[in-house]
Figure 1 (spheres, one colour):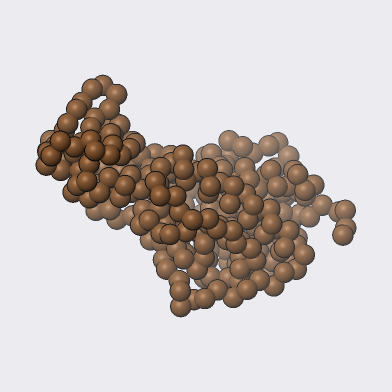
Figure 2: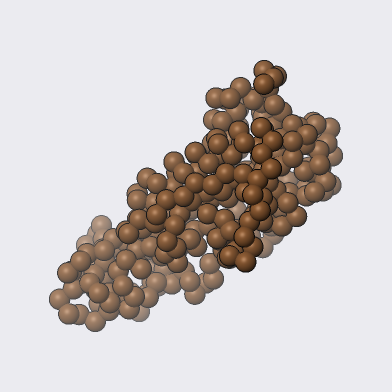
Length: 286
């Protein structure tokens, strides 16, 4: 194997995704020649790209753009990268951009593809899918449909809390990233996805952000975890006729004395206890 560092262009919109890419490059002796990030489409603007910018080192060039064809393509073509890596980027990498890289382009998707393709992997937890995982695949003409290079999975924990999710999911993502990039560099062709088994992870609707106290406590916990995992609480619920943002929710088995779902059982400055279908939950509101 050549000792010459590979020239990498990386597409990231989450700080944690760029951080993993940067760690890989440092540990393997390869060179990131450009970091591409974006505030996202006009209808789905996000501030998350700023977390990428905060980690940029002086030796890294960065491009913030929403125009891949007219702005990113000419620059990347001049850079002549060996490999393009995307992880958490909201736009499809154009075929013309893929063609600039000697080895092609790969993408890390944090679900067990072909399950939950698309922009919202948190739906995996929201719906209580039986398996969590991560997949590295070759980039092709559609989102998350390319040949699978590497995949690692684990059973979904019975209690889907932020701590339980990250305990298993983060190592799976890291393992898949390092193994997947190594396989791609070695020329692994990948395995075609079973498209007939695919599902799509759409963005959460406004209605899906609202918790229903008539649901079981563990369902409410997994939905709250999924809605709040991206760093800003977006779970909501009606309490005593007012809508509140729910920052955290934990089940309290046997915590209901028979009160109707939605009843406030206890309340203090730190948290509230709410009756639900099969018990009670402790919540923190913002």
